[in-house]
Image (cartoon, rainbow over all chains, first blue to last red; front, side, top):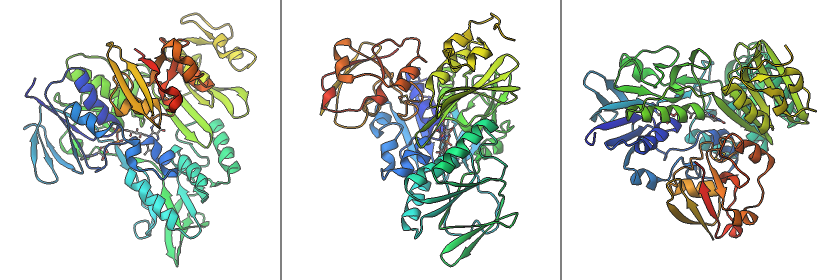
Length: 417
Length: 102
Ligand SMILES: Cc1cc2nc3c(=O)[nH]c(=O)nc-3n(C[C@H](O)[C@H](O)[C@H](O)COP(=O)(O)OP(=O)(O)OC[C@H]3O[C@@H](n4cnc5c(N)ncnc54)[C@H](O)[C@@H]3O)c2cc1C
Ligand code: FES
């Protein structure tokens, strides 16, 4: 195994964790970790949160220090794009025409920001996506230069909302435009959307829903954002947070099986036995939820990296993690566990102002918990979902009872049906 | 400057010095095995769990409510458990010994 080489494309949460886990699991061969991004690999979640508001350098948010790669003999190749995979010859081609052979190949190519096809979007000079450290540096300097610090954020998902919260901290005037009739419509229930809508409005963000942007015009030193219904908004700086495009082109051109992501089995192996894929770019079958899922989260990238490192070292372990995610906005910490899709009932448990949890059920099965400033609900929800515990719904919504008292052991039926 | 000692699960002793940032950051920067810091230090992942050797708990102080709750994710948590991303390095921490959680 010593003269084998493992090549990892993408050095972010997935790729970096994989490289270090490979060593921990006993891989003695060479490890080559390649990324198009020239920065030492960094944490992505702070980009829309503390990195945007602080004046810090990206190094402050590094996943690992440079010496750690040297110590573990992980060769980092940064600022270089992989253009092609030849799975018959087991080779990849870099943008400097160099060809590298591999024994094992891992695709941790993640995703890039989706730039919607809006008229004028490419000619207006001050439109920014937010996916990389470079994007944040560009946004920070554009806002510093802007005369009135007037920003329009297009897209009301988690990233759009986090950007809005961060920009308010920087004392910008923020307008957020959402195409659907509520913010967070693709990722959570109307109940939670209503809470965040109120929160942002109380912090001075102008939120407008049902606003489909159709054109951006440059007029003197301002930009005019025009919506389908004729509404116009004005901005010095425009930030786009409307979702991602998966980086699956390489895999597709190589002939790997793709279906809303690179399709992987329970060990994160693709349709080619020498190629694995992890993180945002993948689509996998979840034994817990009994369906195929695609996740965009640190948890998924890190946990798939661990399972893959084991599999490559001959210690097969099925990937069956319960997904979790967080979002920090102002002084609100949202923690989510499980997947709420297909819920038939959502129960609210209130603790105090700005501290509550939403529990999503399908019949009596707990699917997911969304907790606001309520780590206890998040933790107990995690255990209940993992272990398929029954919940006494009446006790759950009554804060005179502890959450623990509402959770009964596995298999026993709750008193209330 | 504070000197902090980590005892890893393989009983290795790692002594580090720091003057700012969190104990988790110090550990990750120096590759202390068992401290991952996956969430970047925002009390969301519990992968930075340490046990404070009892005689030093007065130096580290008490965990916040959210930290205590998050610690319950780990079945090995006990009364000496802390999330090291929540331990800010100051002179007060000088000399403490931490055992990295399993
Ligand atoms: C602003 C923001 C905030 C977020 N907040 C949270 C949060 O609070 N909690 C959470 O859990 N998740 C959050 N996420 C999501 C999280 O960051 C992602 O799920 C995670 O980064 C996925 O990791 P990954 O390794 O799969 O892919 P990515 O992070 O997308 O990395 C893929 C890497 O592959 C490289 N690459 C792709 N193709 C090539 C090629 N052909 N050649 C060379 N290199 C290539 C790219 O340059 C990139 O660096 C956030 C994301 C963003 C953008
Ligand atoms: S680093 Fe995630 S909880 Fe401490």
